[in-house]
Length: 355
Image 1 (tube, rainbow, N blue to C red):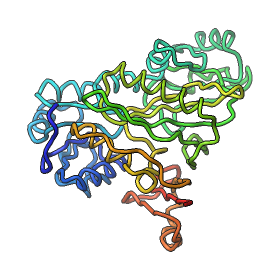
Image 2 (spheres, rainbow, N blue to C red):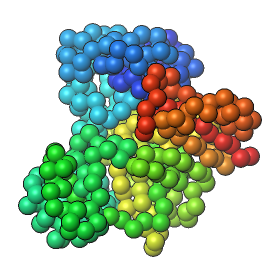
Image 3 (cartoon, one colour):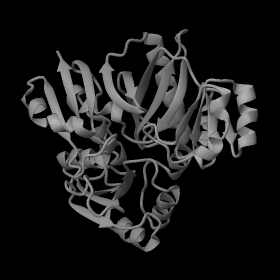
Image 4 (tube, one colour):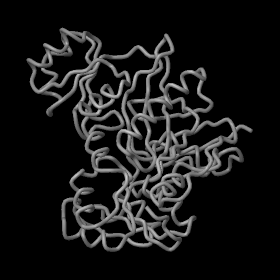
């Protein structure tokens, strides 16, 4: 693909906070951004040059969107893969590819894909009935986690099974086709963020160490408390995934670090990632600028980390402390412009640099 000139328009599917930060990064490189979203008032729309509000399966609206932009990317993986396919059919360049979206949208397909590449995952089984759940528990054991196959994120769509009493009626409670996964007794959680260009070039960031509360990322720190061999193993896995998809853009894989130092893949995200928000201030090129560079066929930027990092998510009413956070000389505050504060809703983040 020929590099896009400044002044070109980049299309982004989705109007959330990741789209907002992508749009800001694109503007800093001289691009216009057109958001396609089904939300009438979205965080990304308020910073983008243009917005089209429509249904993700409306082929006429998507064809109009395709005519307005030079390339299309996504800010979240649950945009229907059919949307990306319709845009390609309308003549648009789309990155990442529809296949990456389709696989990431289904937890069973995702783990099967990772295993096929030789990347370790927890033992898992597809669950389509209570009988299948009981059979899988007999083989995988307890404790385990029952998850929906699709549309689960930030801890949603999950049931922890600790005993046989938890198993009884669990499939009905889940209410959708599921996947049972062995519960990993890990030492820590980490994520690798990497990017690949149209020319196959790859760059990566330092491994992030992550802490979750209620299934939602609460804190990311760098450097991660892991060995160089763990960092290398994570990068090797990321490179396998990037090449397998012929991927373009930023991609993240979350791992469990086991007591013996081995890595077990939890999930992948074909997009910029919450654990990478620190890169805005803490790396020479942010993950958002990196993604824009990749999809625009620009040279990928340097990823050198410039400090020790602590990134804290602002969940729900955490963001009400904005004035105190803004007064902290060591904190870099980012608020996402969401109109309503709700429990478990990501309202912003703050990054602290320790030089």
